Image (cartoon, rainbow, N blue to C red):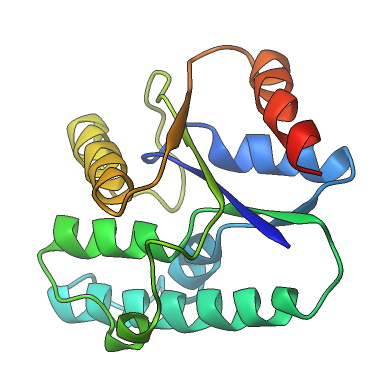
Length: 174
């Protein structure tokens, strides 16, 4: 199985893109962080709460990847990955969850698409402003690059063109 990651900073269009790829028949895994944030929305935001959220996200991401490893799909597309958790830990200035230490993150994923961010829009789970979103985007990019991933940058364009751009690669890997 090939593990494909679609990532980028907040508000870059990942979820919209993942949802559309799912409608087109690809095996996709939605962003785990979004669910965790909604579940823990009643807890006051603090450094400790951010740490708890990152641990939960890491545990769920690892479990999901293990579960998918037992299936026969040729490729699975993830909305973010464990590496994104590292970027957010740096952003929040907290230690990353220790559960990640036993995973070879430089070889965990086969291909990485990073979406260039369009104009910023707030939603119900985003806490970042536009400036912070760009900082997170750059942290994500730098960590993937430093881990040795060949990053495919997806430029800003409408959803249909982004899908077509990505499908050129996906069809080669199926």
